[in-house]
Image (cartoon, rainbow, N blue to C red; front, side):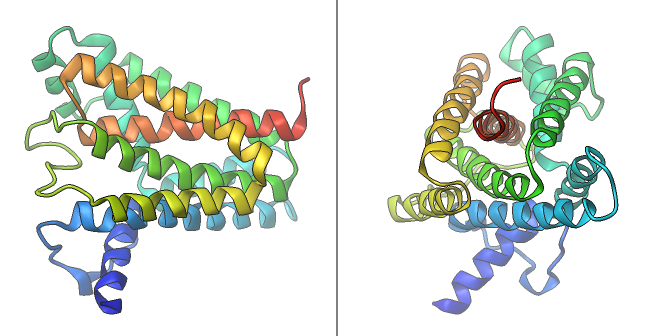
Length: 255
């Protein structure tokens, strides 16, 4: 039992990062729903690593250089998995009329104007928001935002029907997450956020981020009938940037 759960955690770690653990290959057929419960935990760990790097960078570089270093490290560590999904989704929804055209654009490896602008805005908003708060708060916000963002993607995958073809980042799950698995994923996200930020900042930022991510999920439901791997990446990124912006605003204050 413990060995199997450890294997599922390592699968989630390998899927969400560039870390390769050959001992777990090949993945079982139901790896996606079974390992998804650990994705918020992996997100919290990624946030902790990036946050510690930002704190360390402040010992050598003036602000806002450490924030840029941290965001660059995050992209390297995760392989820009969710950012790629955001760009593809915005390109598809911005330039695709029909469902078939949207899915065709998502499968295209080239980036369009909507995707490029989305990445610029999201990364700039993250950097500007984090640069407004102190190094310790940056680490705390990143832990909560990264954990919650991964849970938002898991929740969207559970709530929406699968809408993509074979050439997508996350294929159709052969089984659904159980209520217990979804509850555990939620617990990881909530505990990470609560202990990192405290009740007020966490709750307000979470409400704003959930609403923003829900808008993307609803648009996906209307435009293509459900989720694809790219849509899950977009949901995660919109949750993450909204959470970071609102949390930073509450910590630093306006102006």
